[in-house]
Image 1 (cartoon, rainbow, N blue to C red):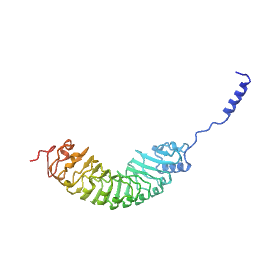
Image 2: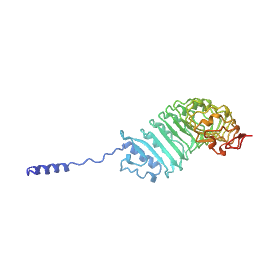
Image 3: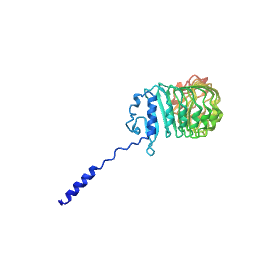
Image 4: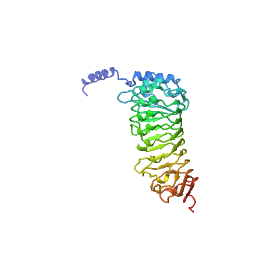
Length: 331
């Protein structure tokens, strides 16, 4: 190596090392960090949020997520936490939030804070398996970007807000396992969005099911364990897209003989109602994974063929005069 080159090399190396190396850039927005620390404080500084250290980047904290482009907090997903108290009002001060979840937190009490109406970007609201109470608030209908609403396994009371049908992007609703009363809103048959999934089971809903629901393209309906009555045959039909329907443990009353089922149907549970007539022949053409028509007032021979004989007697028993395999032969 040329001896004249060495001093130049050493000088270059010295200059390179003398420049400060860039430190790890902090992504966290200072306003978002301030709000998150307020939420932590309002929840009593739980161990579940121990990583929420003011000296670290909030984009690296547990149960939060930052948008890769804006670096703003877009998800807060608190789950299976030993947390007591109420949902802090400060959650409404995270303006870029798209997902808000408090799930499986049995000591979470109180009501849904009205400050969530400020979350205009919110797409998913999941408040489930908690002890939240009070009515389901009308102001949820102000969250126009909402696509997914899960408020099940809580202590909510009162009636279902008809205004939920005004949400233009909503596709899934879970209101099951609460203490809701009153009727299914007539407006639910006129959803502005493409509602596909509706869970209302394990409440104390009464009255008839609105016929307007028959105009929608549901894939899953669960109205089980309520006090609903009347004819719901309009929920079925050859051209429907329903895959799962559970209407069990109500006081529904209609002639099953006249019902046509869509090819898409894989799960049908009608047990503990007042349904009469015969089982339609079309049932044997379906690829059913579950069938239960027990504890009704059905009569006649069970159609032979398809998957109908793969279900045990408990799927059919306690009817007026159903007969044929898997029940005893018809006389």
